[in-house]
Amino acid sequence: MSHDPRFFVFLKERIGLDVASVGEAIIERAVRQRSQAVQAQTAGEYWQHLQSSEDEQQALIEAVIVPETWFFRYPESFATLARLAKARLLEIKQMRALRILSLPCSTGEEPYSIAMALLDAGLAPHQFKVQGMDVSPLSVERARRGVYGKNSFRGGDLAFRERHFVECGDGYHIADRVREQVRLQVGNLLDPALLAHEASYDFVFCRNLLIYFDQPTQQQVFDVLKGLTHVDGVLFIGPAEGSLLGRHGMRSIGVPQSFAFSRHAEPVAPAPTFVPMPLPPRSAAPIPVKPRPFSTASAHVVPIKPALADASTLLSRIATLANEGKSAEARAACDQYLSSHPPVAQVFYWLGLLSDVDGSALQAQGYYRKALYLEPQHPQALMHLAALLESQGDSAGARRLQARAARSERADSESKR
Image 1 (cartoon, rainbow, N blue to C red):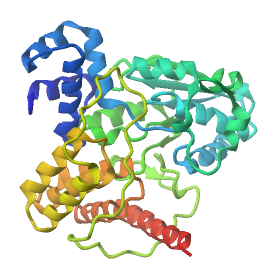
Image 2 (cartoon, helix red, strand yellow):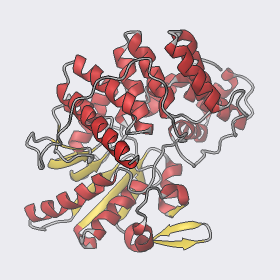
Image 3 (cartoon, rainbow, N blue to C red):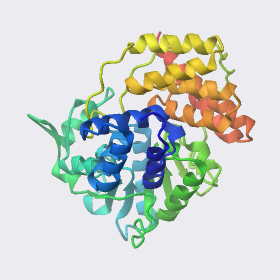
C-alpha cells in the first residue's frame, strides 16, 4: 500500500490535509492499520471498502489526525485571554456575553481550559460562553463525557484540577459548572456553511491546524477564521503559525508566549526584547528528544507490530546519515522511523534540514513547523525556520522565532544553575 496517492487525495479533499505536512509514512501507517482492522488484503480492497463506508472514512480520518493536547497548554494564552476578556466586557459595557470559539477542540481540553481560566479570573457564568468544534465525532464525544486521565494534566501547576475536577475510579470528571459553559459540536473548518448564521466571536482559538495545510488551503482557512472573528477580536494560534498570519495582515498583540493576533497593528503590551542568535551549524549533533504520541486516544486501530529497530538507534542513524551528506538514505531512515514509531520533533527537524539543504524551502518550512508543534521550543527548528523566513523577507516572523529561541536558551541555562 506504499505511496498510493488515492488516500492522500481523499484526506486532502475531506479535511484539507497536506501530505507534506505530516509525511507520507504517517498516512501510510494509518491506512495499513485500518486495512488490518477491516481485514482488507490489498490497497484496492481497502479503497473499495473506504468508498462504501462513511464510518470507515471517519475511522481513517481519526487514525491520521488524533492530536496531542492537554489542559492549559501554552499557559500564557489563557492568562492573556483572561485579561483581554475583562477589558472587552468593559468595552461593550457588559451588554452581552462574550463569545469564544475553540476549533479544532479535540477532546475538550482547550475549551474547558478557556472556561476554567475565565471563571478563575472572576467572570460570572452569564458573562461568557465557549463554543467547541472538531471534525472528529469521536473526539467531540470524549469531550462531552468530560472524563480525563493523567496524560491530560501536565506541568507543575495543577491547582486547577483541585478546583474544577472530581477524581473518580475512571479518571478526573470535569465539574458541571465548567461543563455548562461549553457547547460542543462536530464541524469541518473547510465547510463553507460553517457557523454561517452565528454572530462573530470575540476570541477564537485555532491552534496547530494551519501547519497541516498547503498554501491555498491555509488561505481558505484564514478567510474563514477572519470571518468568524469580530473586527475587534483576537485570534489565538499555535507557536509555529505566527508568520502565516503575518502574511495575511494580522499582527501579534505583543504579549510573549500568548501567540495572540489581531487586525490592529498597535500592540497591547511592549514587544519582548531579544538578542539575535547565530544559526546552529548544519552538522550539529542531535539534541535529546522525548517521544510524544499525538494522543493517548486510539481511533479503534490495530496496534503496530514491534519495530525492527528501536527508536534511539534509528534517531542516531538519521543523524549520522544526514551529517555525512547522505540525503536519500537519511530521508529513508526518517520514513522508517515514522512508519514504526510515534512522531517526534527531531525527525521532522531532520526532514526540514534535508529539504532546506536540497533547496526546497517551502517543504522545509512545513517540516520545521511540524517539529515546533511537537516541541515548541526546539532550538534548532526555531533558528532554521527563522533563517528561512528572513530570506523570504518576513523579518518580523524571523525576529519572533529568534526571540523564542533566546528565551528558551535563557530558561535552559537558568534551570542548570
